[in-house]
Length: 531
Image (cartoon, rainbow, N blue to C red; front, side, top):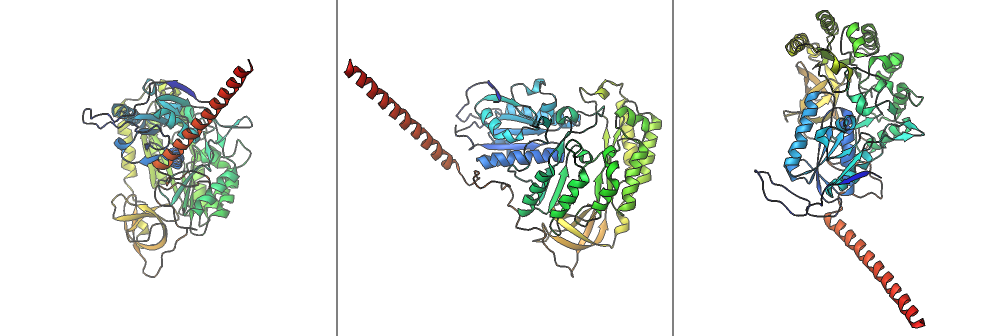
């Protein structure tokens, strides 16, 4: 049973405007009829968790809304990687409370630091407890505070988390995000995520493949595998990442695509040849995100990254040799406390050598509770200077200019920010913008590259190629619940349906009590007559 702390009776009236904010209170005690606003910070793993929470809430009858002031309860799914993300999360909690909303928090911040003062009195959903989101939201609406922070275990060992077969609402109906494991095997000195996600816990291959098949049957045409470290997958359950990938490749329909998530160098080193063979398959994007963080062995040692620069280079060189054209993305932390000017120069040299088309440049943030937070920091001005110098190198080259005039086959999956183009990706997961013509979303099209930028290419549709749909079926409408079992509740069940159910239950209860009272009266009368 969850630990529940009573706060105060839930209000049932609408409160007047206060300071220009319209405060909406729950107008019904019927569970599953209120409006829920769900906001997410952080990685693809967090996005997947939010999709699962939205799916369960919607399946139960809650209305998931984008307008937060119209919602009765806010579910805020947090990220603890950087200070700014946590600050935004903290500010959103404050805004929710000031607006008179019920606030439920989830994600890595409350999991890693549940005793934080700004979380006091709030209901908490742990990163491995997302399958109980309905329960927590119900209690929050009643005015209770519930905290579920436990770990899922199978035969005494940490599991991947809540079932992958739960209902979900995909942010993009064409893309399925599958978390293949949670936690990691590293002990990086700067990382707070370890405090929340913990040790490695992998899902069984069968469960992952089943989820993929079910997704394809619902019109999904692109699958993202995600975790804190995909390369470490399976080491806790006696299987390997290539074993999983080969089984997934077998069930990917023609034209659909698979994207592999972030992997740290130590664990992908054991599988380089197999990974290269898998990425040669036309259904798998030739793309890999391998964070190096620093070009200095000394800094990597202080970070406790468990690999050398030479080993990282071996990963990049091997994959570029075996999979020509592969996109390797990486991360750099500028200004780690022990980083000297010489160390940073090695980082600059590494990035200049490989000219990574995708480079995530981060300034060091001391995260509370980590070993690096206790180290003497480099002055902020110098950290910003190093970040700028690395950015200058990154901006000095254009990775796509040589592709001008190429004909490419791309998969269209979403709308671009300018709302004038579709976003598509080629075999190397390079972004290609195509004209926003009707009926292209979810289709494979052939384009001629007519323009290149630092982060994208633009394509002109081929007149001789007919767009084709790789999906097995029509994608689910935006907002529709995926993966519902036949007996599950659906969003078509309205507030009136729930009200009827409640009245029926109450009437049945009243009739039962009446029958029991009548029986008791008859027994008492009989006993009196016998006296």
